[in-house]
Each structure stands twice: as structure tokens, then as C-alpha cells.
Amino acid sequence: MTAPDELRQKLQSVGQEHVLAFYDELPKEHQELLSQQIDALDFDLLNEWVETYVRRKTAFEIPAELQPPEIIPSDGGPTAEEARKRGEELLAAGKVAAFVVAGGQGTRLGYEGPKGCFPATPVVKKPLFRLFAEQIRAASIRHGVTIPWYILTSPTNDTATKAHFRQNDYWSFDPKDVIFVMQGTMPAIDFNGKLLLARKYRLAVSPDGHGGSITALRKSGALDDMAGRGIEHISYFQVDNPLVRVLDPLFIGLHDLAGAEMSAKALPKNDPMEKLGNFCVVDGKVNVIEYSDLPEDLARSCLPDGRLKFSAGSIAIHLFQRAFVERLTEGGRCLLPLHRADKKVPYVDTTTGQSIQPEAPNAVKLEMFVFDAFPLAEKTMLLETRRQEEFSPIKNMEGVDSLATSLHDQVRRWAKWLEAAGVSVPRDADGHVAAAIEISPLYADSADELAKKVDKTISISPGQNFYLGSRGQIGGA
Ligand code: UTP
Image 1: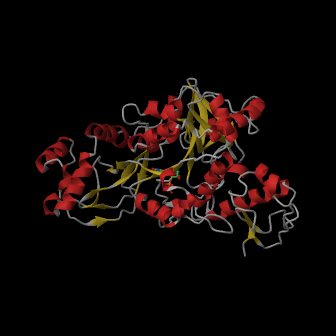
Image 2: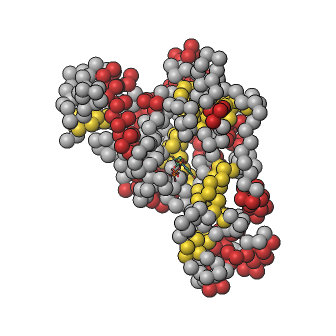
Image 3: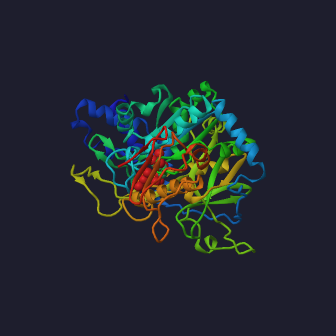
């Protein structure tokens, strides 16, 4: 632990000594906690962040030349068969790991606890983590290998996430194949460039964004663990999208055959102004430009054939070559550009000692976004995906991207899989599915898999809660 005088001097040199306002009155263990947090700060970087993102509020500069990227159609294009086979070979050879980023704060959902524990399916109300666990186990069983699962947590939810896995017997994984990776944090900075105290003994910090996952893989030793297991590709997804296909052989195969360091699934936007990052090409490199940074005239611009020029949205489904993540973190970490968000951050007033709950944004939160790694990749690959098959996130308590919309979309997708397999599904006069339907990924994790095994004569009544369990048994109330 750095001596208090040294700490004070260090802080004075960067105008942040106010965070020691209560230091002398703190019990020893709290002094240590605060010192450790301060020790972990990189003061040069802190000064740079204050100058660049707080005082100057550097605005995003739209590149002069912006082109749409090449995107492989959702059927996989002419090499689809070869790619699917390649993906399956890589899975069977144990060269692919699953990686879910679950370190976010989930403020919009307002759920007590890690988002991955949120009950998210229509009949069984499976937690998101269970839904993904079943997909990964299904792929492990199908390919006769152990597929390890890496889970990004943050200091706020790491303990609760681990407890959830312990309480649920690791959702039938061997605990050594579930690897928790804790991400770093960034300090909150008020509009005068000052660090804030969340408690008298603790700086106000928040997770450093999903872009922090890259450094976290290195620092936690997860990259070495992957190397030891012979993992070549990392299948990255977000914790809040129950429709995601966690390990998709076609996507994996296309990525591998293209020699891509980083790949993504791209979603045709519903509307030019839809709130998704936009895939663009800048100086020959794929970039994702946030919806808020893309001027409306560009967002609405069309190609000569009338199609939207920037129609591809980012839904944070990626593949990384492990070697790429190693290259990015060669110096120990990967500093991606920071994105500023103005937030209401509760703090302790260092002159009065009072706890303040601000009513308006009072501080800057800085985050890294994983898609900013795209321009750093030598080669990339984008595959189009279909919304109804693969994207319906749970972000908000109500309205768009909420549990209600996601349940509706999950039922709709499972109903379509059943109908494609020849099973009759009740629908109302408007064509909406008239039952709650859920299928265990352990039974079938794709329409093709379902068509191979389902009994076409099963009947589903209107209003029924219909669950097709791991062995094809019918459940639900
Ligand atoms: P979001 O950007 O939706 O943020 O994260 P969030 O924290 O979940 O929710 P809000 O904005 O507070 O309401 C997208 C994905 O990235 C992960 C989240 O867990 C989610 O899977 N994430 C986000 C992290 O793992 N770490 C972060 O620091 C931020």
C-alpha cells in the first residue's frame, strides 16, 4: 500500500487530492480500500481523459469517406456448405469457446441482480444464463467435446453471478469449464474534471464497457487458459439476447475460411434511424458508427438502386480469433477509444460529507465499445442475419426491447420452427401464435435440428403453455 503522504502528493499533482478528504478519519481497512483504488489509477491517462472527454467534450468527427461494407447474405452465399462443414469441424475439434459479456449494470431493466439471472423464457422462465448453458451443452454433446464457457462479470455483479452458478450446479457444466472473467472499471469524473467519491472510502466507478472485455481476457489469464485448451476462435455474445445462436457453425466456418480476425453478424435495420450501430467502411476498414454519431442525411442516404446505403446494424454477435485478442493485448491491455455518457452519479460531497443523489446528470461515464476493435483487425467478415431468428434483446422494463417483446419473439420463432417441421401451431384470426411455446435448446437449437426429431403429430391447444423438454418430453401447464 502506498504511504498516505505519497498518495496525497500524487493526487495533488493532478488536482485530485479532495478524494482523501475523509482519509484520516477512516478505519484502517477502509483506508486500504481507498488507497488500492487510487493506486490502480493511471494518472497520465486520467489527465488525458479529463482534457479530452470532459473539458473539451471532444465530438465525434464523421469520416469524409464512408462506404457500405460487403456483407455475406444470411444463407451463407456460394460457400455456405463448405463453411458449415468447416464450422462443425472446428467445434468438434474443440477449437471454439463461448464468451458472454455480462458485466453491464442493466440500469434500464431495473432488475435486482445480474441480468443473466433474469427469468426470460415464455413457459419455464429460464434465467438467461440457463438458456445459453443449454445451447453450449447441446453443441458439446453433438460434437462430443467440452466447449468452455467464459463469462464476463464486473466488480458489481461478480459475486452474485458466481453464487448463481454455484446454486444451480453450474447448469450441469463441470465448474472448471465455466471461467469467470472480471472486467475493469473507470472512475466517474464530474463536469469540473474531478473524481467523485461513492462512499468516504470508495471512488465512484463503473464497468469500463464491453470493450473492456478484451483487456479482461488477457489480465484474468483467460487467454492463456484458452491457449492451453487449444481454442482458436472466441464466440462473443451479449447476455440480454435470448434469441442469439451462441455457436453457429455457418458463422464460425465463414469467419475461419475468410481468415478473419474479427467477424460480426449484421442485421438489416428496420428503419434508417433505428438505434443500432452502423457498419461502414472507412479507409478500407470496417468500422461501427453509433446511431447517434451518424448524421440523419447519411443514415437516410440510398444506393442508386434505392436500397439504404448504411442498412447493416450491429447486434454485438462476434467472432474473434484468439490470436487477434492476443495481438491487441500484447502490451498487457487494449485501450480502445472512449465513449462519453453524461450520467447521474450519486456521490459524497467532500466539503460537507453529505451523500448527494443528483437530479440531473453531474458526471461523465467513460466506456469502451467492443466494436471499436474492428478497424484494428487485418481481415474481417460480416454475415447478415435475420431479426426474427436471432435478435430480440431484453433491455428495458417496458416498451421496445423489453421482456414482453422478447417473449413474443421467442414464441414466434419456436412456433415457426415447429411449423417448418410439419407440426400444427394454433394461431388467432390475426395470424398470431395462440399458445406460449418454448423448446429446450438441449432438444433442438435450430429449425433443422427440430425437423430431424420432432413428432409431427403432437398437438398444441390454443392457450396452452407448451414446453418441449430436453428429451422431447412435453411439459408446461
Ligand atoms: P448495454 O450497453 O445494453 O448495457 O450492454 P447494460 O449495462 O446491460 O444496460 P444499461 O445500459 O445499464 O441499461 C450490452 C451488453 O454488454 C454487456 C452487458 O452485460 C450486455 O450483455 N456489458 C456492458 C458488459 O459486459 N460490460 C459493460 O461494462 C457494459
